Amino acid sequence: MTEPFLAAHPHTPETSRTRLAAIALMCGAVLCFAMLDASAKWLSASMDPVQVVFARYAGSMALVCLLLNPWSHPGILRTQRPWLQAVRSLLLLGSTMLNFIAVKYLQLAETVSIMFAGPLLVALVSGPLLGEWPGPRRLVAIGVGFLGVLVITRPGFGGMHPAALLSVLGCVCYSFYSLATRKLAAFDPPETTMVYSGVAGTLAMLPLIPFFWTMPQSPLVWLLMFATGVLGGFGHWLLILAHRLAPATVLAPFIYSQIVWMIALGWFAFGQWPDRWTFVGASIVIASGLYLLYRERVRHVPEGSARLD
Image (cartoon, rainbow, N blue to C red; front, side):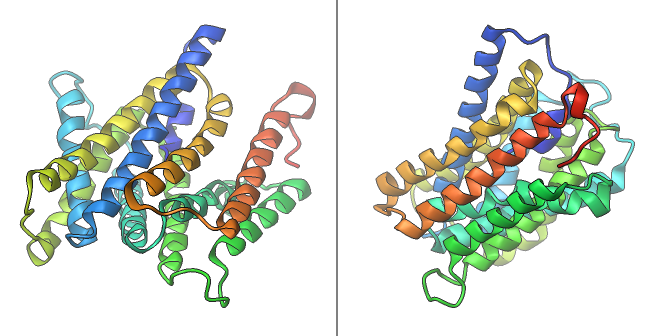
């Protein structure tokens, strides 16, 4: 999934060319995230997901620190909200861990379809936490979206692996992580938050690695472990570039293109094709998310800016 804090980053004056460039960067980012999940699923067949999570954070931290460090970016480690940075990083780590465990048992399309419910949950809890109360039409869209999640998971009908619950919990972690990053956007630049994400995740995983480490048996496994970090770090870097060129309201709909890559990678790499219920549920969730984006744009026009419906 994407880094929501980037939506608050200032962007350059928008033209048709910069908008197309930003959209291309966004599509490249979601492709990186799809390949990251596919790599994690492949690696989880030969090692514990904990080791995969560590590889993802350690590799990403190395890449990010190479690009963003105190020598090339003085003051990059200075944060006004260290505790909020820590909580946010742990929420992201929890979401990654739960998602990587779930993707070991579920199809790629199933996990990403559940994670698409994240913006719906953010919209729902933004009222009590941020004072951004959704209106009746947005509440209906949120409820319909959650029905879509139920169609995907089909609880009590024996249609989905119990690991789907982990994916749902990962979505919850990601939603609160999104809220934390929105708060941080008012205090710290996105580059600082990006560095802390990698460093905190790597340090938190270090004590666990001796208990879960399995020596990779082939160069391909080493390569994919390294690739998880590169894909995660590079994907987030593309997001930074995209949000500097265009606002989030332009870019957000293209997040849902990730479902196309997940279906393609699931079929090509694992021979898995989603069933009809996954397609139906994903369509409901995506339609609800797009409607929320539409209402977000409508309520920011001058005559209706005070309305939240």
